[in-house]
Image (cartoon, rainbow, N blue to C red; front, side, top):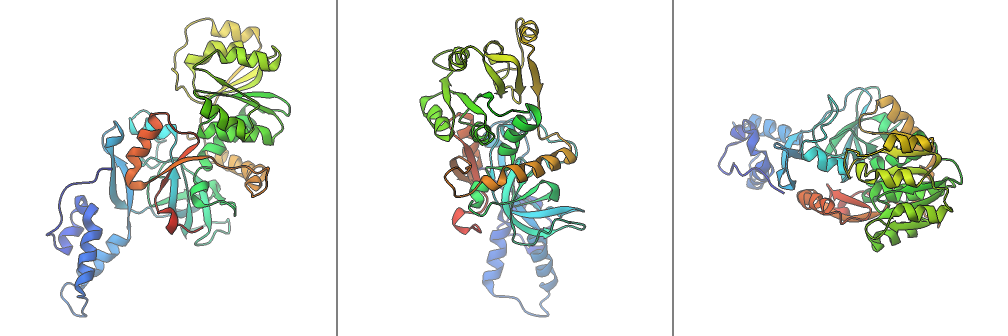
Length: 396
């Protein structure tokens, strides 16, 4: 993690207030002033002191990107804390989690929707700090919450519409809860809203050990369908099978299409969840069942297609569907969160059949660049968590 190198060691209080570039050591300077024990009524610097303290209390740490590029371009800075607007809740962020979209945004390839925060981060868990006007949901300070975001997660505070807020299940820590909103809502949306998966159907899930993959395997089982997966190592396939996958295929070793045909007796998969795209199209069409639904939600394997895609898809009466979540309307997200809260959230319990977010690793906010490097190396199985507050200090 990199911070501004400009020194403010010798600046006075009023100079600190006028020097936003010095925010990185603002808190150190404040501590030095506190340690002097000078706080006398009538002191000529009293007004400056109160102004200084008030200004600092309205700041927060956040990860910023000035120039698109690699993980080294992630900068930790002090910036103004957001204020909740009508219908919004201010969350004190305890933890956030990485998504592939974060890497694309850092590179300048996936900007936030117009009017949304340009800070990276699509999901958080934390506690309610304060409420904006006209909040109706009965939230109160210190409630444990998690939220789906359009951006702003890599920060100490974020303001969110109450429609995308969910209570943290009692048996989960805030670190675990941070792994739920974007990932599980994406999987739920793809399976239920888009593919309209039915009981007993076979669902092929690419990247079965990823965040969305591990969530999708569990949801398919929960709703009475049959999950099968692809992954690039035996270790990842084993994880998916432990979560409930009926079969797994290592795409680096053999054709996954043949594996699907063997498993289904030649019938194929009724639903395919595909985050790979172009590189898999021929095998996807080959193993798609008649009248099957191929749901595209990423293009990690390329955007272009060479060959007779349409003709082969037509011969199977196949449906090619696609979906993104970040750009959806607030109304859509509200309906998604409500449906997920009713149908899925109660199953995050301590029972043997309960759902669980799969966490690969945890990093501090200061080490967010290393977290990005870890994901780019494709080493993770499950979610990568970034703790804004150290786990031992989080409200459990």
